[in-house]
Figure 1 (tube, rainbow, N blue to C red):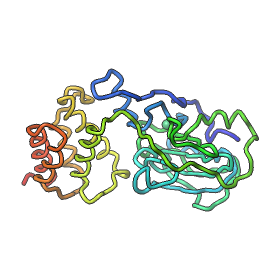
Figure 2: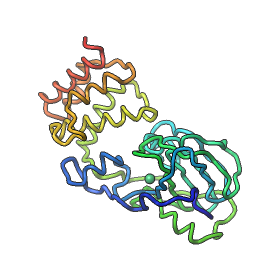
Figure 3: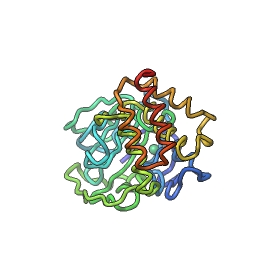
Figure 4: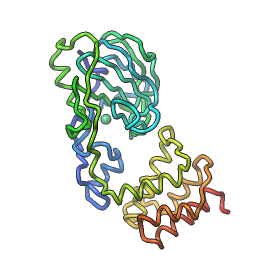
Length: 284
Ligand SMILES: [Zn+2]
């Protein structure tokens, strides 16, 4: 068993926990920068490598997935968030599932058997990534999604075990996640979901459009922090400008206002909905 790249670790497993961090918290920047996927800390190991660095299979195994994930994290058996993972490769290494994220391209196909060290693709900066790096995660045999790390464990244990890895085979799981990250209250979730649904009416995935994804986070800031803590001192107007640059979608301002108003003060909801509606419909 080997690390997928020979490079320095830029973010360790378990670092930057976001448990309990909410808008306005001093550590809220972590949410803004890394997303809300890691309430108990980083679920993998990051290696700082330039885009295009060959990524090697950590061990032999069978390719279970390559490329962007579809749907949401709940639509794949490994609970991989598409918007986070970007282009990724998932390999059944026998004693664990290896997940290689934020890649720029893959050179394997689903069903392929790869040997340890074989190049499976090139590193990149896709998905929820703030700079070129490889994100590597391990789901051990018999993983438990409720371990507080979405089932993930520190890959180092497998690396240091060296050669303890068995031949690729069936990896068993406990596919019944009951916990989610806890940064959001139910009401918080309702707000974000309402805004997201309204903008991406029809269930359009955002996983291939990072700017839209980021924009949602900024809208969140604008709503809950009055725009005061927006990165780079951006105004709500700037954020809404990004909406205008988004791919054309149709939105019903009245329905948008209604869905948002269920969760936030009516005057603020109307203001946001009105502005979003105008921007999305080209100023109608
Ligand atoms: Zn990472």
